[in-house]
Every structure is written in structure tokens, then in C-alpha cells.
Length: 152
Ligand code: FES
Image (cartoon, rainbow, N blue to C red; front, top):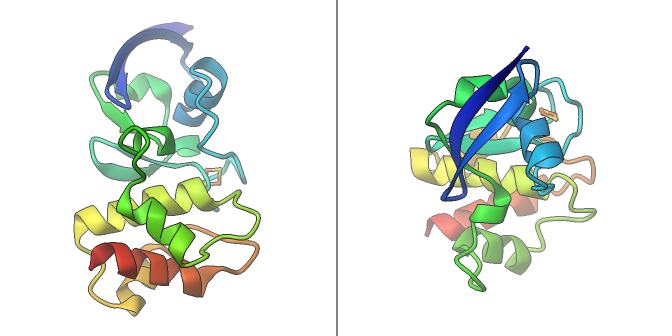
């Protein structure tokens, strides 16, 4: 069975008909062509699919698209302001906080969540609240520094 869902994605209001088993991540990547959010584990373990739903961090792979009626979704594609990078995106560049880049969209969305939730009081606090986002290249120290820079 499928369901019609009205959802706002990066400020654009959409109505889509999705199979009831479709994840938010697959809705974004397969139906809307927003491939910034990445599929790492597809099981809630890596954080590569992190997006904001009504301002809160969720794993796109664990969220059913049919649960999103009237929700506001923000993905990495909606973070910059036109040509102007968000300060956190700029901080990732300034701090060299990525290597292969696969986890970066999820790291940035998670970092944004930390900034909004006020979990940026110390490097340790950032590390703890970013612990659901894995980086196989091991850029953790620089990722924490980037979030610290954006929080200043
Ligand atoms: Fe969703 Fe890994 S792809 S947590």
C-alpha cells in the first residue's frame, strides 16, 4: 500500500505518494533526487543519513516517509543560503574536517542539531552529542574543532 504525504523539504512544499515502507532517506535520494544525505549502514548505526525533521536530528534510514505528514525536513542541500555557506559548512573547510567526505553531510546536519540544541559547551560535550556520526577516515578531532568554531 502507498500513502500521500505532504511535507516541506528545504522550504519547498511537496505532496508525494510513497510506498508505506519507504524511508525518509529513500524518499530524499530516490524520489526527490536529493543525494546529499548518504546511505552508509541503512540501519541507524552510522549517522551518514542524518537530517533535521522539525529542527530535530533524525536518522533518515530509520524514519518512515509516511510519518512525515506536515513535517519540515532540512537536508544538507538546504543549509547554505544561496551561494553563502552556513558558518558550520565554512568551519568544516577551515578546519579540514573531512577526508573522503562521505560522512560529511550527516556530520554537518548533526553539528547543526548540536548548535540548535545548545550541546556545544565543550569539546567533550560536542563529542558526546556527535557520537552517533561515524567517520571511517578518523577526522573526529577536526570535526569537533569545526563545530566549536561555528559555536563561537
Ligand atoms: Fe542511516 Fe547509517 S545510513 S544511520
